[in-house]
Length: 303
Image (cartoon, rainbow, N blue to C red):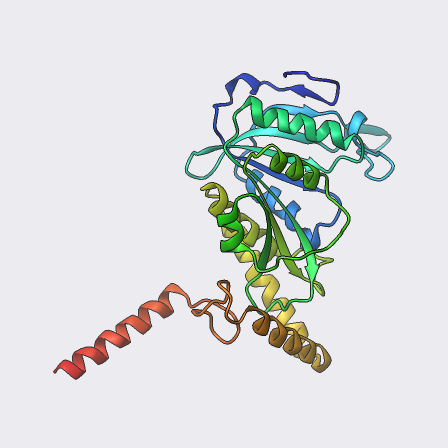
């Protein structure tokens, strides 16, 4: 299928892709609450660019007036012209496990041909699983662990990870078309949707990308380094909490969201019995301290 049509061209790594790798699809553009997808792509590419397997043509798929190329001007000269990219790359996670990453802009045009081409990649390279992600703004509090809605035909992951199963009609992402085609073809696919607090969704919310990368690990077995994201999330959370502490009206809103969130999850498999009142997991040091105290008290009783 190499070179099929005119919307993509094969890259240098086309003939070096082993059969049976997982495919991760992360496309920016429409509906990326908290810049979740963008931050996820950056976290994956931060530890090394992959080898290009195929590159899609922006002239065929991109509306330049909506997402314009970027020029660099140095004095009186244009020194660079950068067009948005949409590539399929051969990547490695932190343990050296290979996977395919389709990342870049969401196409504006020729969705049917794009989905057909990606399904062709999946069949040609005998992809083991396809996992894609996006993010939605939702009325949930930032003081609770960020949750996911999950769709697809991998029922084990849907049952394990999803907190929301809705019957709605909503504007589609191009990867929804891809997911639909894969389900019809009975090829394994799952979509991870980060549910980002709506009052933070216009900025960068590191917790969204963290949750997506963690769930990607569950879905694919890949290990993507997240230390930088975790540090940014700690700083982001401290700044948000500081601003909220000085605003009583916002504190009341957060309390109402917390009550509704906890009531919704109560009794579900996603309710976390190990979380504290703020929805935070204990640290390793806190767990060790609790265990040490328990063992000490037990020794005292035995003595």
